[in-house]
Amino acid sequence: MRLDGKVAVITGAGSGIGAATALAMAREGARVVVADLNETSAKGVVEQIEKAGSRALAVRADVTKAADNQMVVEKAVATWGGLDIFLANAGVPQFPTPIEGQDETVFDRIFAVNVKGVWLGAKYALAVMKKQKRGVFLVTASTAAIRPRPGGQTYAASKGAVVTLTKSLALECAPYGVRVVAIAPVATETPMLATFMGKTEVDAEGMARYIATVPLGRLNKPEDLAQAAVFLASDEAAMITGACLEVDGGRCI
Image (cartoon, rainbow, N blue to C red):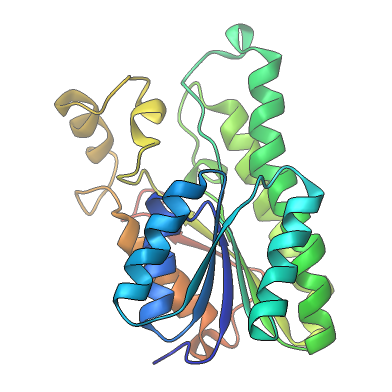
């Protein structure tokens, strides 16, 4: 197992990419703190992990709050003695809207979760990893940081910010043997997909429009990102840091 004995924290792990990654890392031997604003969803993921014979802990956490980020890191260390992997995955989408029609409160919310949430996770997780002189800090970015879609300027800006943050942190952490890597998914079949499409629910028109932009002819499934995260967290990726891995079926070519 590629992550045998590792301790992982995943934010936004109650559904979508976070849930799939929690399950995948647990299958590879990691003990996982499943952190989510929705505690019921987090507990549901933990139940799946435990039924499969692995160990996990559900924690309610708001990534926009420093105390919550500190708490999830401390729980991981107190429960299992260290922290090897942190996936800053929690994020919120943007309904496609021209800049002149975008409300300031939407900007504030997107940046609070998508940028400040990653920054706070890094603040507390990397302090532990630097002391240990080991660890991998992963960030769920987006192809929107590289090739944005019309009307998604606020979301794209937030993901561009965390890609740059990833590179800066990678340089800061390299002397400690700690790696920092971003993952850029193309549109993924998660509960957020309808919002990105500008719809209340995913329909055939929206799917056809999005699939047409992906050379490999399909959207991501959460498991595509989960497997990428497992690889990047493993020793197989020991020389990868500061990168933004595009998991996008060729969308950014």
